[in-house]
Length: 198
Image (cartoon, rainbow, N blue to C red):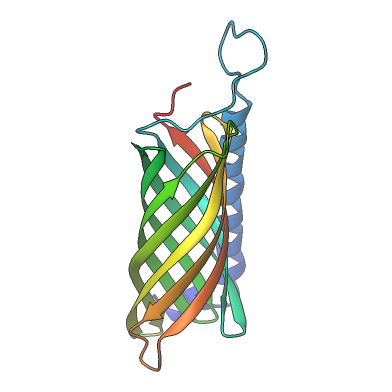
């Protein structure tokens, strides 16, 4: 990347692009959630449920705190759920990006999670383990680090095809040239569900 992309005029444009993408994703999810549960349905609508084989694809926003400093990032996340009695096993992949001054950070993480419905509700609390690689660029300097961690959160289905996710995550970042360090993250996101029939 050239230095011109990091100039004063480039950052507001980048923020506008991120904002527009978020609004489009939110509009699509809300539209999916507003669809009727099915023609000819009688009585109150059924509580949305997670089904084996369902796939969730969504947009996440993250607030990260590291040793007294904090920053925000945006990411894309995909999960596939399989039955694991008495809950669901989730296998996920996520890509996140953040920019701090002239430092660009790209995260690629894999996840293994277990979730179970809270009673007869559409709320699925979960535990997850994460591992991945982080690539950082500062000018022409490039450095790879390796975040490992665990998270606790909840997936709330607002419809058979839409869900909201909230999560706290702790990560230990390894292979830093100075010293390994800890991260605390608060994440929230919106997802569209595929292959999750009523």
